[in-house]
Length: 397
Image (tube, rainbow, N blue to C red; front, side, top):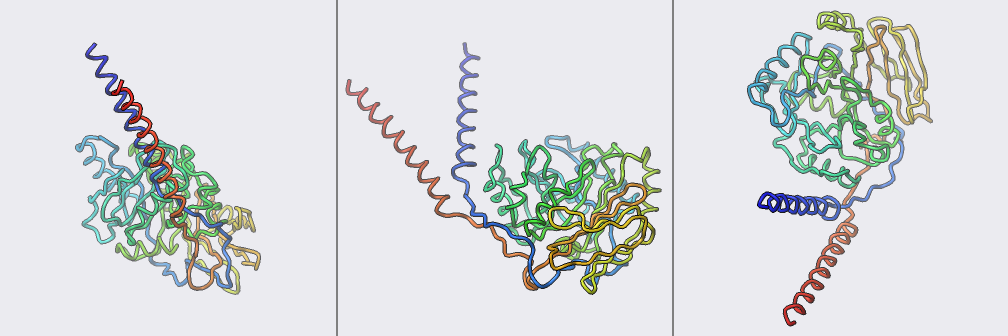
């Protein structure tokens, strides 16, 4: 009988907790006004690769886990050493550890160290990489999130103006819909590839709606012993090996993403050999309204992709490709498939007004926010009055 009472109290407490969380997420949470986005437009073309230094390409991974929630510290310490040594053996210049809700300082002795953590702890995987944050934000919503919930989390993470926000694995567990990607704003990058997935369709949705968001590609590894999870997707950044230069390069698009064809490797030695044979990008130029990409060796295909992911041009079995940026084009991004199946994803060139990359800003709808809150408060007040009157009548009897 005592156990039964304990169970009843536990279930009652759980119901109250769920009720409070539902109120906080769907009633108290700010409601946003999302202006209708428009395609990139303007007389100027933004070229992220303008005046790059071809001697400053650096290999980087920002998404790797040394530990999971509640994991023992001894195992985590061993993972830290293993991550550092493994990525260094593959020639990585920047090695970041993005534990859940925890800023890992293991690499902080290096000038290139960028503090990073993966934000988000609910089932639906609305997660973000937060680079250069001074502290961890614990704001998240446990149930399936509305568009306003998602924007509210991003804005909370962006309260630190020096932080760089990347949406990761956008379609994993249906975290983000095409409609979400159409309207969300105030973030810097989107993960276009990780160790097991490509998110090119998501990225083209973002670009087709005029959001100047740049590419990141990372391993998102959880099992460091799995050859298919580590050193497979990475960023190549045109930067000096100091934090501010790295962040500036990522936020302005002076980088590209790479995804190896992991199915072809049986050992790390095979993979290291493949790294050595990857073609280098010698030049990315934009002259006379023509985008040209030159590589150190011939590749299988060079594709130029535009609005809604439409293929504008394809060049096969060549080390150089060019594409004219017509008046009808809003953006052009480049995908390169190497002969071994490795994919390169370049950041887009897009139209803008020559001053600001975007004027798209979701704002809090004050009227709608307080209408929801006041309606709920009035409802609670009515319920309380009814309960109180019934109680008074019962006492009089």
